[in-house]
Image (cartoon, rainbow, N blue to C red; front, side, top):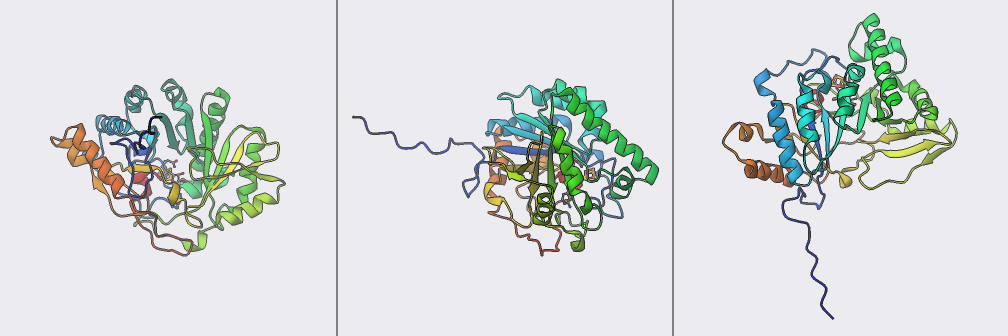
Length: 346
Ligand code: SAM
Ligand code: SF4
């Protein structure tokens, strides 16, 4: 009988870090511009816009994506800033849609321009939109997002219209991301959960995180996910859902007989670094191995220099190798670290 062949190990050229984690999920921040100024994301004094030439071009973004796919990336999320304000987004989507093998394409948006862009997203096979929405009370939308009261109400209506249109079309999976802050919107967990009773959407409650040096963490606003879950358990039977391969960091649940599902993302109280599968690219062209780390790797200078695709691939492998085993943040940490969220995209 023939001896079994020795295990081949991982194929060379996949993005695998020093701890054996395969990084197959690329998050591309495609702009630092945003049409909102959420209180937990933007510095109160505002954020200077990057000069246009500092932001990666659509061609450069597409090239990074193509090389990443050749290194085994099979899921790409567009984020920002607000990705739907990026001019000529259609051409980037077309490039990503044509990649072989075709990655799963997703987008995170504040939803203000979702209704206007729905057809475009569907046409290019985007599978899922994550809509960031932190309140279901129109009068609260302005104060949370930096808009005036009336503008806030109108903006809320537009976001809601986008969500309803996406659900009605049935071609895009819809997730709502809500950051619950103590004393701001922590009384809304059950209202968000109720949305899942008759709508096939997923609500994700994200713990407030100390990210971005210029946005001081307001520790008194931090709400642990366990407290959110405690509140939701009061609604009835909250059934834990099993983790699926390729699942994100959310711990998933379902209210009994609900059409949709719920999840909490416990970035601080119980970190999920052991299962991290992400590599990030900031709007200004820095590869970012960890959301909470200041360590970045400049790929823009390679893109704008003489580097061929092999050199870009080397830079990505180096960024994977630089990924720390886990981040240093916890629920008592008050030190904001890492790149500004509005340039990195969460
Ligand atoms: N503008 C888009 C949006 O809001 O969906 C995409 C970029 S935004 C930076 C991506 C996600 O990061 C949003 O869901 C937002 O709520 C989240 N986020 C921003 N700052 C955060 C913080 N300090 N803690 C937790 N989540 C944060
Ligand atoms: Fe809000 Fe997203 Fe804009 Fe940050 S980038 S201010 S989270 S809409």
